[in-house]
Image 1 (cartoon, helix red, strand yellow):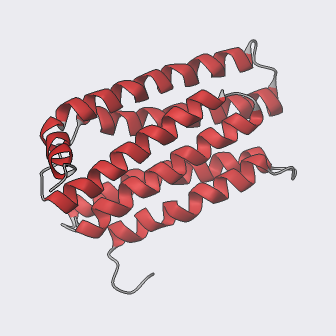
Image 2 (tube, rainbow, N blue to C red):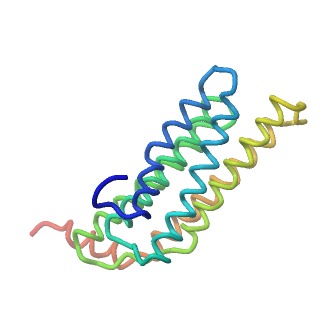
Image 3 (cartoon, rainbow, N blue to C red):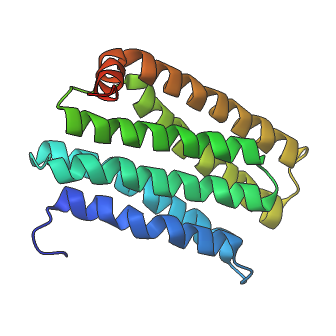
Length: 195
């Protein structure tokens, strides 16, 4: 336990370490690397659910948590996609879009804090996280079956199209995020003008 951090934030912080740990396990060449990677991924998604429940049920929603949660999610999900890229399942443009989207939204949050302009929360962003997590667990499970039980027909092609679908939805969430925060973008443009 870290002094001064509530349970919700402790769970959120754990994902900061679990993301890189997943990548090390998934790309490792030891005997049970795929099993360990899958277990870490399940733990990542479980803590994502648990920190939200803890924050709401114990009234532990905090400004620190609001910043840490999306950062932890980003690190975890990018770790998944980097792993899929190195494995040859994902294309570089898919990973680039995932990273670009989260960087843009992260900086919008910074601008929102600097300008004092409210940043609208988007349901599509929440569904994006759920979809990316669920798809990653599905792909890892399929990969485990493919390696340990029996070859999955058209495995790499299936995985590629699943990841392409998630990437397309990720683009949609960015467009929807920008459209839903037009006032913030106007404020940023206004403050960027010469004095």
